[in-house]
Amino acid sequence: MTSDLVFIEDLRIQTVIGVFDWEREITQTISLDLKMAFDISRAARSDDIADTLDYKAVSKRLIQFVEASEFQLVEALAEHCADIVLEEFPVSWVYLKLSKPGAVRGSSAVGVIIERGEKK
Image 1 (cartoon, rainbow, N blue to C red):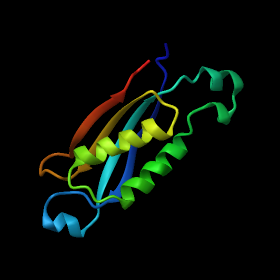
Image 2 (cartoon, rainbow, N blue to C red):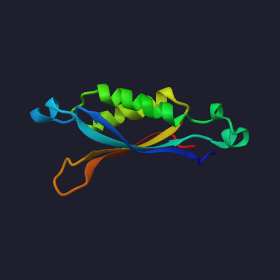
Image 3 (cartoon, helix red, strand yellow):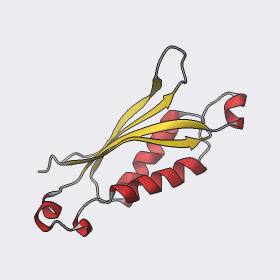
Image 4 (cartoon, rainbow, N blue to C red):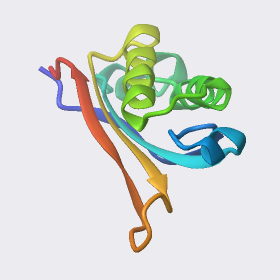
């Protein structure tokens, strides 16, 4: 059983997101926080990048996907991002927080938090 987590914090990406007509005409910033279950013991022993989860590759893949997307709901975007992480990278579980800064007056951000997969 592993309780190791690799994380990415406050990954800011520009995208078209929202349900209102004006939101479909502009890009807005979303922020992703991820925690991914990954056994780091092999990398810790070898000190070799080939044995670890490449968080730069995860970040680049999500940036590429999110920038090209045009979802209406943060829920849909979050679900697709979690699917990408689970399907394309060697993780068994992902915690994903998707924030939409400035979406509600008086708050710093709104969004969703989802967990997918099985944390081992």
